[in-house]
Length: 172
Image (cartoon, rainbow, N blue to C red; front, side, top):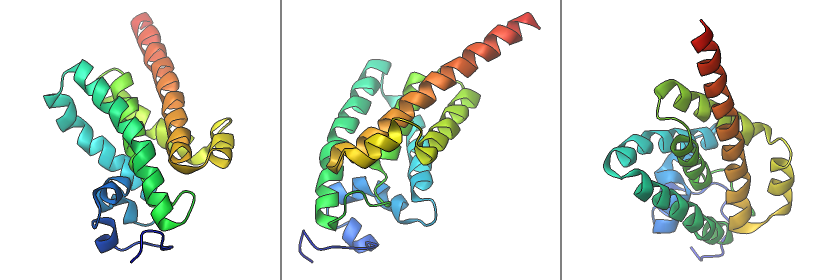
């Protein structure tokens, strides 16, 4: 199969033929239907705890930053090979966005789960400017950018919930 061959729904064999494709498709989680973005996010959630347990906070921050930057290339290369602007099975953007949410929120299970759900809501609903970014920024940057903004929204609202819970919990 040529590199510029249009693939509507890639096979597992095609995905694992190249490392960047395996990453872009979340080691196959992006092939699960329906809800490939949610499955990729679940993978990101599952990978977080081993990463968080072996890397220091500063190394983890650098790792997540590099994963986001590498994601631009990973996603660009994969969409070029697929011949589509943003394939629904590409979930590296969701994986990295979940890592950002989990890195930025307090390391408490309930708020991590709240952050995860908030990210999924923002990623699916695409409030302004996420929808605009999704429609107007092409290529690997576009694939990554809308999810990174959805992660930022989830972090801000997650911290508001954390503060609200702590403030009113302290009054009781």
